[in-house]
Amino acid sequence: MIFANKWFFAFLPVVLFLYFALKSRAHKYNVLLVASWAFYAWLSPWYLWVILLCTIIDYCAAIRVEDSDGDRARKRWLVVSIAANLGLLIAFKYTPFVYDNAVTLGRWCGLEVRDRYWNILLPLGISFHTFQGISYTVDVYRKQIRAVRSFRDYALFVAFFPQLAAGPIVRAVEFLPQMETPPTPTADQIADGLRLFLVGLFKKLVIADQLDVLFVSPVFGNPSAFDPAAHRWAAVAWAAQIYCDFSGYSDMAIGIAKWFGFELPRNFDVPYLATNITDFWRRWHMSLSSWLRDYLYFPLGGSRRGPVRTYFNLMLLFVLCGLWHGATWAWLAYGVYNGLLICLHRAFDRAATGVRWLDAVRATRLWAVLAWGLTLSQLVAMLILVRMESWADGWLMLKSFAASDVWGAWSPRVPVWVPLLVVAVAVGHLFGKLKSRWGYVVPSPVRAAACVAALFAVVTLTPGVTKTFIYIQF
Image 1: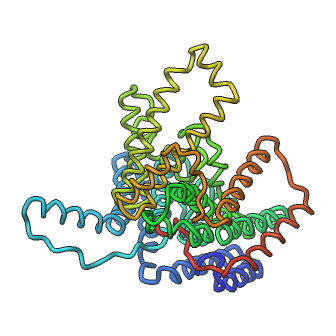
Image 2 (image 1 turned 30 degrees about the vertical axis):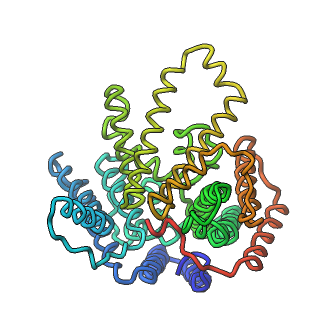
Image 3 (image 1 turned 90 degrees about the vertical axis):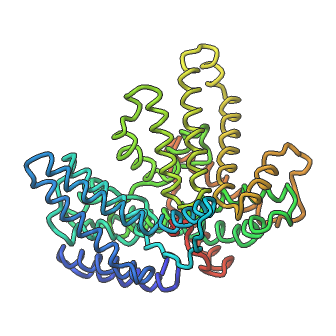
């Protein structure tokens, strides 16, 4: 049962009805917690114990952190929470990767080692709810929030079903204060929730899934059967697909939460309009970027311990970011690639700032356009790394993407729908830019018409839900 699945459309109205039919705070939150656990169990029935165990450990550890007198005891309980969350995450997500590479290393050393005949299914949302648990106990340790004394309240914060499977990563300081009194959704929240849900549904079913079926999977599955122009379009289409798939989920999660009266943090801010790699990571998966900054980069010293330590911290941050996404060498390369670009951009920015003629050049529109084009090219190239079927296929795709054959910009193997869907993503970015820059508000009749059009498109142009959301796999 995922968003936009027919069972979800039956599940959500029942939960909403029961939630608002009940009057007391305890009954409302009991219903919402049971519904969240049922949502989890539907998608990951054998691993319900994982989220329950993490919840119990973090709930108890935070109380002990707050109640302990000595700093040593407080740190000890904080370590218990962090170790439990990271231990489960590492065990489920990285054990196969470590075993496979140990087998390869052993064979290089002349040892007889058997291939892995077993596999480990990843529990639903483990990369997200473990980070939420860590941030909670760290915030209690830092005395930024009080430990929750109600197990039900804390369990609901961890398992709240709209964002459980793929974020955004919600912090206790953002969510728990909203739970003091069950919030009543306003008319604007209901309308915005409807808009976000329909926009997210449109992104997922009309753009992301269609790009994947029509073009992305066939080309990346067998790039040697396509020409370089098709490779370039497939790379661009893949960038559009992963953005619409992930931001579509985030939009739907935020929209559903609004119907219960809760506000979740924004997760995307037109990321493909970024003019440098640092700007991109301020716009893409914003809840993860800010989490890594506040709970890893700053505790490591940030930029306060000199340039060498700063660059080391940045590289470590993005290597871990890559591995958080997936336990493969491709995702590790993705992390290293981003870390190097971030360090290079920081070094350039520090050297160029204050140089009068460079400041003047960097303030021009031409520079902004060139910087945007270079940044977007870097982003598409890095996404090829995590979509390729093999390193040989990836190298072939990268060579085609980097080629300067302007006359080969089009290929008869590219379905006409592909550029149209890519353009739709570009238009959505430009509209988001205009809205954020000038505070543009769409009139209610136009919003209503857009929602109806999106719903009509989803119903008539798509075969329904056939593919799960990409980030649920993380």
